[in-house]
Image (cartoon, rainbow, N blue to C red; front, side):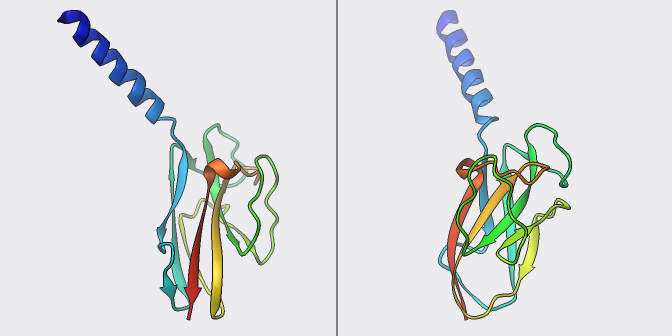
Amino acid sequence: MKLQSLLFTSALLIFSGNAAFAQSVEFAEPKNGATLTSPFKVVFAVKGMAVLPAGDMTANTGHHHLLINAENIPNGVVIPMDETHKHFGKGQTETEVSLPPGKYKLTMQFANGAHQSYGPQLSKSIDVVVK
């Protein structure tokens, strides 16, 4: 019985240790498929990484970017800075977005302190409609 208990405890520690390294991003707001009125609030969430301002290259850290109707950014590629690639290099976790009426694909992309994308693992897209 003691051996079974030890094996079970070891398995739990291994599982919980791996779970700590699970990294992902989500939109806390808005939800996929939402119909919105401009301006609207966007809230970013990240798991397994810390949000720090641009310039800080500490491991397992970075900051958010919002891509509007733009293609995903591959791992290691610097995210452009223009009207469709919004940077939140001060470490912001939310923003207000103003868009004209239409259908949009919003992509959240997490990147390191040098604005280099962490790729699809730390990217999430949703579709929204602005009235």
